[in-house]
Amino acid sequence: MSKITTKNLNLWYGSFHALKDVNLSFYEKKITAIIGPSGCGKSTLLRVFNRMNDLVEGVKVEGDVLIDNEPICGTGVCDLVKLRKKVGMVFQRPNPFPLSVYENIVFGLRVHDLAVKKDYDKIVYESLNSVLLWDDLKDRLRKSALSLSLEQKQRLCIARTIAVKPDIVLMDEPCSALDPQATARIEELMRELKNSYTIVIVTHNMQQAARVSEDTGFMLLGELIEFARTEDIFTRPQDKRTEDYITGRYG
Amino acid sequence: MRIRLFKEFIIEKLIFLSGIASILFVILIFVFLLKEGLSFFKEINLFKFISGKHWYPISEPEQFGILPMILGSLLVTLGAIIFAVPLSIGAAFYISEVAPGKIKDILKAGIEMLAAIPSVVLGFIGMITLVPLVKNVLHLPTGLTAFSGSIMLGLMSMPTIISISEDAINAVPKSYKEGALALGATRWQAMYRVTIYAALPGIIAASMLGIGRVIGETMAVMMITGNAAVIPHTFFQPVRTLTATIAAEMGETVYGSMHYYSLFAIGIILFIITFIINITADMVLHRKHK
Image 1 (cartoon, rainbow over the protein chains, first blue to last red):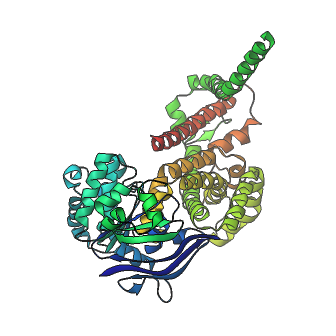
Image 2 (cartoon, rainbow over the protein chains, first blue to last red):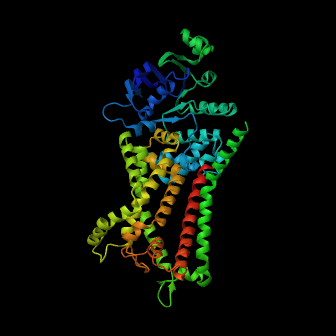
Image 3 (tube, rainbow over the protein chains, first blue to last red):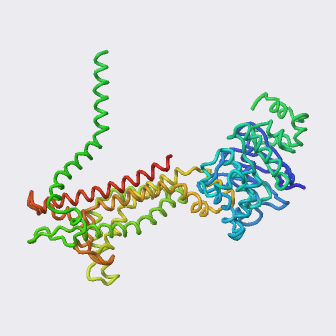
């Protein structure tokens, strides 16, 4: 079933046309990768789904974005808080807050008033456990999250995101700051999380897209050139530009 | 070739001199203070000086107790902190996180203007506006009180606290705020749940520097606080600060008298207080960079 759908999505930063008539559907409980060279609009596209582009001055969006067949910002004022509870995001550079590990996880719970205080411990355990951090950090819950390793920080950010039980997790090049071993372990984690969440990952690492995703979209200069099952994109690209990109002729 | 080398040598030495000038001046000032003040402590015990309740420097027998002035300074400073710190932090957050571009520029210019007003002018304005107001609104026998002094000094410390806090808030990585917003926090929640923690060392240091300025301020407090060297029991009575004592009495002392030296001894105490505050601020700022 289609989880996210866009119809004739256009986006401008001032006069720069960053997304051009993007039409696509992401499917539930799958990993969809968006690949393309730097500046092709893949991060911009990702940030449309949780409206993070709103922070940029002079941004203009046209067209429809549907999540569960409902427009994310239908009539009237957009309820960003509700949207972002449903659509979590993991960033390129791990960005744990300068608070304790524990406070990082319960941040979303406090913000959304999701649970009573006595359930916090349980949720912290579950969240850390599902990103395989519990054993490492169970004795360091009160320590600052800034003292963790890069990989642990990124795992913590994922744990923090899933603590509020979103439907969709957006990942903006989540491994680009990590070494290959850590990358492999985060990818393993993504495959596990797929059972519970719809994951959209933006990456400029084609091998990563090939390894973890079921569907892949290829973007170039703001256009969605091709969108298909990952193995088809990488073995039988329909468009010449896709073929040139995945064979490394540019990018 | 030789001329060029000579030039380099001269320039290098000149820059070196400018570099150590500030520390040299501090050392000279301290040495001078010690030289003039220490002979005082040969006659009067330091503990007695600090804890004495009466300041009668020219009566017979003379009494040198600066406890009323220490308490006066602390009271005025405390009041100024309570008034200025929350207001300044709020202003810093407004300027760096909320205000649109144009208002931001106007506010920043306004704060610089506030910093540029000479303290004697602020003291004068306080004397003819704030003091009668305090007197009439609170039905006090006089408006020359610690409370009035605190408000005026708070105003004077605000530019320091605001601009340094604002720098600290601006230096908070954008990714923290983005992360908080992406989790569904509102702008306000992102501010008070995340940004303020990241900026806290800078904000604390800013407040400490503001406090340093308040403790050392003389002219305005002298004009507004009433200058009664008695131990204050409430905020709403006249007090005298350490600085005002030196400024008011230095002109009337006999050179070389005990009274003369006692003022230098007060200077030493003040120097030590501000030194401790600055060191603390420095340590807090440094911890942030580690």
